[in-house]
Length: 349
Image (cartoon, rainbow, N blue to C red; front, side, top):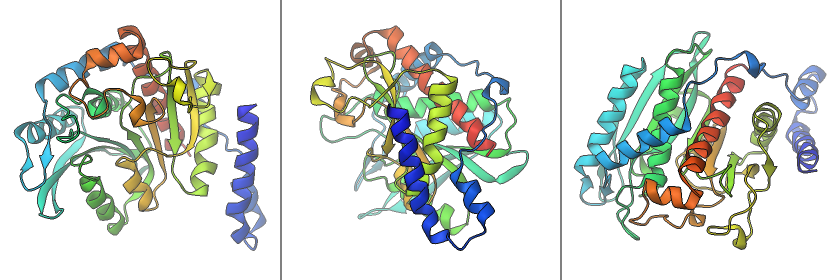
């Protein structure tokens, strides 16, 4: 029922998008309104990355680099700088061309960093598929220390996309992008996305990862969102269905929006194609510049996670919320696979 309703929505939205194109050639309108024929995912390289490996990496990352703050009037802490250098060095080891860009932003002005790691595509190297996360933690509210879920989980996830794709040829270039100062108002990603737009950089997709891993088979959603534009829905919804439900056979649900379905109660474990992005992180700056975006997250909203912006946001606490280490590892692996296979679909459009 959910998928049938969504197909009706796609058709309706496609019709709205195509209204201004009524005078366009018939072949274009027909092509834009029909469901694309996607690459056979049975034939793409299978990832040799496990959820256990990713969570082990997360533990090491947040224990080695806590307090990754960038403070107004003060600037970045030593670990904020050190983690950016670590991420750049590791990605370079996987064959990505890396650099750390610095921007002066805010009032008073402070230095924020972006770690950019690009692996050149074989057929369309000027077109990027980007993976987006932020490595900073918040020094207000409850004062996050390790920031394991927000956003050590996304920062760490990108490390394993780098590892997984290091030996895989793609048509388009892949860009791992780690941003500073998300917790200060998405400052680094705003400056960077504006820079890309001015350079006329082609971006096929911006994939966002902020607070990922606590979801199916834990009693919450792996929620997959798309950008705000009508054409984003037309592009994203069939991909989400194809990858998650047709190929990976994940159970489908609505994201569990009811208050009673939050921790510690939870809901039925599932994956949600949750519509336009209601989460506000760095991928939203890419959407602001007109780029197509998708966002993966575990649990529907940030406040559903009881460690949000709190000192106890650690891997052991993530395990408690997920209902055990095994659930956390498998939820992380499922999220990884969802985005990994979506990459191949976008790469072959």
